[in-house]
Amino acid sequence: MMGIVGSVTRQVTPLARIGACFVLVAMFATSVYAQPKVTFKFENTFGKKGFYDRGPTFDTNSIPPEGFNSPTGVAFQSAGRIIVADRGNLKLQSCDTLGDCLWIGSDAAFGTRNQPGTFDLPHGVSVSKNGLINIADEDNHMLQVCDSGGGCKASGGSFSEDTACSPSLGKWCFPQDTAVDSLGHIYGMDTGNNRIQVLQAGTLVAVGVFMRPGSAPGQLNNARGIAIDKDDRIIIADSGNNRVQICDRDANCTAFGSMGSAVGQFNAPVGIDVDALGRIWVADTGNNRIQVCDYAGDCVAFGGPGTGEGQFDQPQDVATHPSGRVAVVDTGNNRIQLFRTEASFKMNAGLNDAWFDPATDGQGFFITVFPDLGLVLLAWFTYDTELPPTDAQANLGDAGHRWLTAVGPIDGNKATMDVEIASGGLFDQPGNIERVTDGTITLNFDNCESGTVTYDIPSINRQGTVLIKRVASDNIVLCESLSTN
Image (cartoon, rainbow, N blue to C red; front, side, top):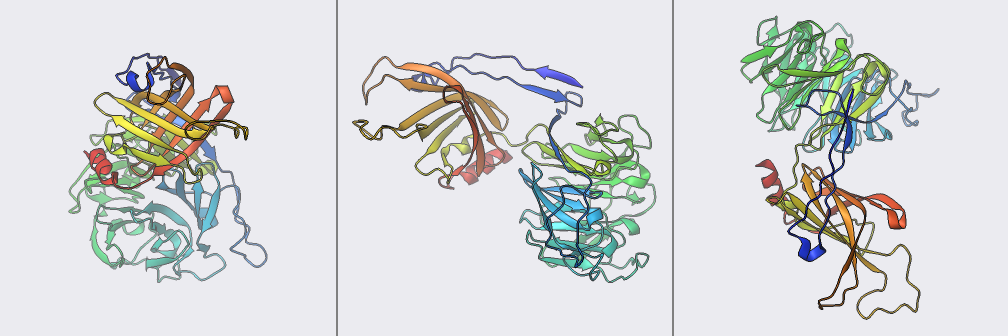
């Protein structure tokens, strides 16, 4: 494991006229588990071995355990929330990044099988753009689509025995994973039938099936993971063939990988995802590691067996988010590990707007991004930490008003800036303004609609994070267009 520390950079900005000569400080420390093409920084882990306590009456409303029972699937609902297929507990859990989780659905162990909303060994999950959760419900031989409240509908699921599989269109045999294309169609990895089925968005009617058993390109052997990239190419963890396949809908495929432990080789890979930067992430389960590959099969690997940070025990899935957050289902350790890699979202001029936190009325931010300069300016209109005395005088405005400014270099989807406090001026008059640097602000955006302002101001011994949203939505379309381009 290597540590890298970035240099401290000082720069005089063209914005000095409105905030003086700001000092730009960019200091960074991280742990890198992979080669330079993929930066991977440990963020958090949560979970332990935990069985769902059904109680004497099998109460499905009991409190979730502080952990998991052989979890196998993960997908992002947002940058700050994931959905986990808690396979051994026969349920889904929706968790924030600190590990605060809620149950979704009920289980088939003490109820009726093959019913929507009832799970029997849920394995893989994906999330559609409309927020619906798609579940490969393995032992129910179904694909289910559920909302966050547990309301579900299903495809397949008419079998009473685990051995009663069917190769008919729309029927499933131990499905292991799901993915969604740009049109909202759901792709299901029909593992027991060594094929992929395509369900129409909304109706869940099977509209296509492709692939067949074998080891040639376009054939599958106990394939367990599926992902779809931005060009609607299908990326497959072909587990029994120890390889990754990249296919179109006509099963024209290329493949890379073979059995082994060298970088670029695999041992029964299970989970797979493609990030917004076009990198393929593979849960190389038998090798207790994660590999990140390009489409030619050039890979880097990190991890290894163990219980420490960045170590794994039979990891079965990996999911990525455009913010740069990565979630790994560390199955044998019954936990989720979260990491950070490069974000695909970049700050752009579509973020130029008024922003606020609805919880703090009368306060807010003006944010201006200067892409050509590589800089972002923030002005924070707020109040002092205590109310001024009742007899405090102010000729204009409230005596407790405070205005903080900060400017700094854009670093992908974030900017770390020095806070500057100005004093000594008079309304609409020139003067000798005194400016003092007082702490830092880090501005972070994962999308065009919301962000965070994280501050550390030593003079008042205050640290915290403010969740911000736009005052108006006029610039969202521009922001999304610039982000796409």
